[in-house]
Image 1 (tube, rainbow, N blue to C red):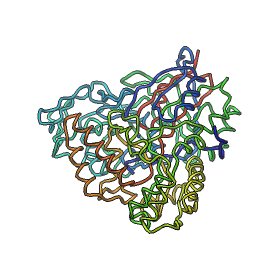
Image 2 (tube, rainbow, N blue to C red):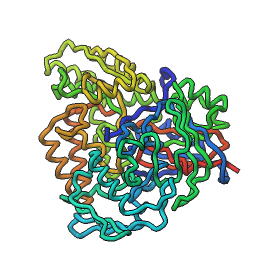
Image 3 (tube, rainbow, N blue to C red):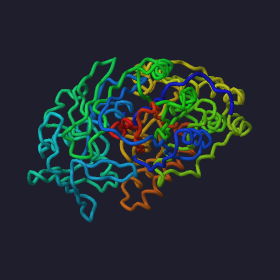
Image 4 (cartoon, rainbow, N blue to C red):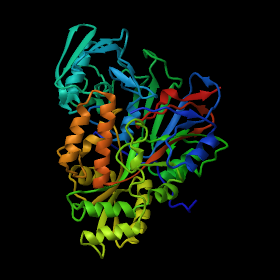
Length: 523
């Protein structure tokens, strides 16, 4: 394996609404790490068998990015969602197998035409403030989701509560994603009229927030009134730590019990005293190209860049082999929808890249700047590798490091950039969460991709009710994106949860989520 670059921080992801559920296998910690390192093109979830669970105890979790907003209707980052996964629940929830199961609703029915959903509320579900969940709370949450432009809620025609246990939602058009979309949080009526949930979240999940020191830490305490299977741990403290180096130092000194790492950090952990749980991050790392900025407004140039970028080298070098090669804008965790035939579309071919550059009028290459969020070392390492790869075909890429707030404002919101490196995840368990951003007029289409063919294919796939039609339709969307080289799709970086061998338990979903309820102290 090639010599590795700089110590890397936990991978950075950007939510697709600004992470969809999958099965896993168990093995020993050492075997899990080895298997992930040796198989960069296989989707796998592996965890360690670490002993008998004990009830109680505290877990200190290190996070390299600061979470300052826990509002499920407004928060824009995947790290925030990974935390509030433990706080909020929707009418339904996604399980590890990718199926949608009742949560706040005990069951639901769908009309034959796919337009009307009838939900029955579960008995004795309490919010963290002790109040029972009522139909008024659900109606308030639905309206809040509509007002917040949450995916899919603009398709709701009517929503009513015919009695105190029933919610009826009628859609404007059939939506095969609706079970995924109603995983959106249910919150108390009037609890978020002025954004209060950002720092004072109230949900029904297995943990409640009991302390929030912005820029320092937050504390989650087990919800002893939880309607479902209770969490093992009494408390989980999430500490915001400045850098990857500090995360590792804090872990090695015992100041934190666990953290999410990528391959480079995992290689520095003492595996004899650590539990290494390997899964997919369920996020698409990409060299995002601004399709309206020359020369990336020319698809031939984008194809040339795609042929020059070596995803395998990036996985091996920046991530120690902990990653799954993509080739398109879909994650392997959505197994039915991931078109693996596209993975090798742009296998490295420098001669082909040079030929395409010449065809596009850039025989002598060109120079551009990639803006990379400085908090994510893995993306910076990726950029350094790509600099060398593009140089082989005459392209000069300059790296500009920007802080996260600047990246969100200038790159994501204002689209003032030529290229960037980021990972994007999905907000719901559906291919639409990864593909909707490429619709020409999508508000989160920060790469400015525009294609009438894609728009038509996406509309057809998204409106299909047959599972076979949805699969075929969304794969067609992926094929168009790959053919157009809308961006360079690199990998799904492995999500590696590391903690001391005093703890066990691990649950993996095709969401960017950390399920603290699955973690326990070993007897």
